Image 1: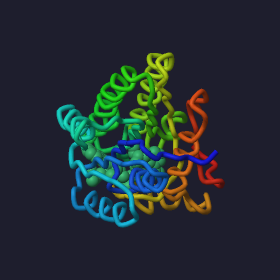
Image 2: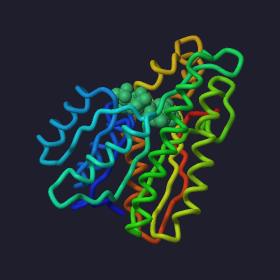
Image 3: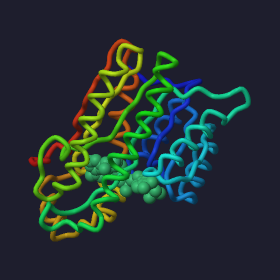
Image 4: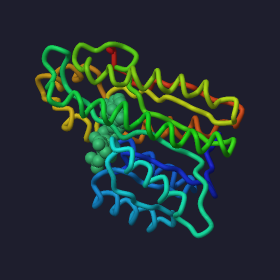
Amino acid sequence: MELTCAGKTAIVTGASSGIGRATALKLAECGAAVVLFARRRELLDQLVSKITAAGGKALAVAGEASVSKEIDSMMDRAQGWEEGGRKIDIAVVNAGRGLAGGILDSDESQWRQVYEVNVLGTAHLLRVVAQYMKGRKSGDIVAIGSVVGRNVSPFSSFYGSSKFAVAGIIEGLRREVCSHGVRVSLVMPGVVVSGFQQVAGYTEENFGKGVAQFGKLLDPKDIAEGICWLLGLPPHVNVNEIMIRPTGQTYP
Ligand SMILES: NC(=O)c1ccc[n+]([C@@H]2O[C@H](COP(=O)([O-])OP(=O)(O)OC[C@H]3O[C@@H](n4cnc5c(N)ncnc54)[C@H](OP(=O)(O)O)[C@@H]3O)[C@@H](O)[C@H]2O)c1
């Protein structure tokens, strides 16, 4: 089923790079007006220009995904985008970061930030968006988890634990809102080549050598395709979870 989003508005967090950027572009191609949220304003502005040049509609809102007030103000901006107000139909809750290493060897000075963005910021946005969609009795929420949020990886087990939390939050939320016409889905990517590796601190030694055997790795567009596929299903069908790995990814 082909996704058509004409007349719909989608919020995409982490839209300045990687999976969020590719998803925002794909949703805009399908006709959605997209609200782009991330910290790097210049990258968001460039994406707005690209989308509007192609005939689409986009709004950049720069902000920090771990700060509740900034998330709330992004929601306000999204709803007040047009005179008379704009309804929010889709939220892709994607902003997040990785961290190389396990409990023994990951950089403990970054643990708090990983949880503040990946878990607490995500939970706050999910709460705000779900409350809004529950009131409207419709909407789609897609959160980005990870294969390491389902399978413990010794190479990124601290980061993975934050995505285990996301999986739990998402299933809890699904049960809270599914009877109100709101679909909630978790997309769990395997290895996607993006800005993620640099931010997480992956190197040839702790990452490159391990994934070399997997063959062709995923592109952010591959995940965007998966997200748009599940959004395009009939409203009574909610694919709750999908895991998307490179074909050759044996582990995790
Ligand atoms: N790449 C992979 O292999 C992989 C696998 C499984 C899951 N994931 C998950 O996929 C999601 C997207 O990652 P990606 O691969 O697309 O990585 P990416 O290219 O580094 O993109 C991450 C996005 O999140 C935004 N972001 C990060 N921290 C933020 C903060 N504190 N406040 C606001 N925005 C923030 C970044 O924007 P700014 O820096 O401009 O703020 C950027 O737009 C993440 O949740 C990640 O955990 C990735």
